[in-house]
Image 1 (cartoon, chains in turn red, orange):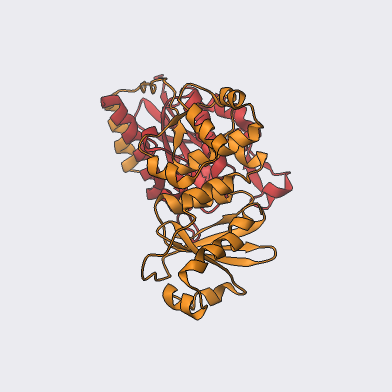
Image 2 (cartoon, each protein chain N blue to C red; image 1 turned 90 degrees about the vertical axis):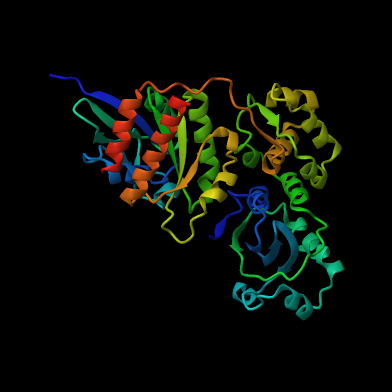
Length: 182
Length: 231
């Protein structure tokens, strides 16, 4: 039996940024979730369940390759999982809830984490752009102190929209391609 | 698009950074516990501040010059409103803000006694330890100066200690080393670094590690891109 080669992309971001939804939207399999009912009362006001280990989605590329999407837990208390999931990844997508500036600083810390440990291509997705009070990607770029020299694009995304999620993945792979050829 | 949030998590330095960086115009509202204030922003500068009893009333005055004459305000008194309703409140952490871009019509130039760069520095001097930790999160962080920022520096009006901290940033010294060299409360150093970042005077120094060459062929990449497109 021919062994399938795995290509790995990490979907990271603060709590409730929309990582599980992002994977759900494009995965060809039912997303494998490791969710647990939230105990923290503050977090429970946002949603009932949260990822505690990882989410996992998959896209078949050809007979020999599969693209694996690994969603990390959002809370810093699970950052040991980020380290595990980041190993061997081709790139990282960091999702930010554009409607919740309380999480912007956390998003920056997550970018710092991956930048320092896994020097791979990163794309920041300003998620929930379909909501009325969403900050613009440009304002989020400023709030996250993303310097132009960092080479990290901040793009508008709505994780419930397949075309939008596809565009985010394509942006990441185009950057990887540019790095490979440049 | 509106910018809204809570001052506890997104402080005045952060707000001024976003407003100032791309020179926005509009009105910034802050709902404090005791008062709601409207801050009139023109091209990234706060030109006027006033308390409002009902936010919707602000929307009835779309012409800034007419509003000033209605309130019997002259140009000289504009900076005083900023002192009274903004600068004196930079230490207050509880409030909800929202910035509504556009909307108000500004007819001319207005005096800017407190440039946004100076307001960033003034606001940074009130940051609490848990606030500075959001950006100055690691004492091993390295920062470097961004060239060509003389005008920003001039407007920021740094004090002597802040100038000294800035002079120590060279892309080589860590936050810890700068703290030790300044030999003051580390919170003062961190507040200054936070302000410098917001002003765009400094940036995180990129680590010298070369971005890892992706272990993938161009052919396979092309396949992945084609496959995602066809989803």
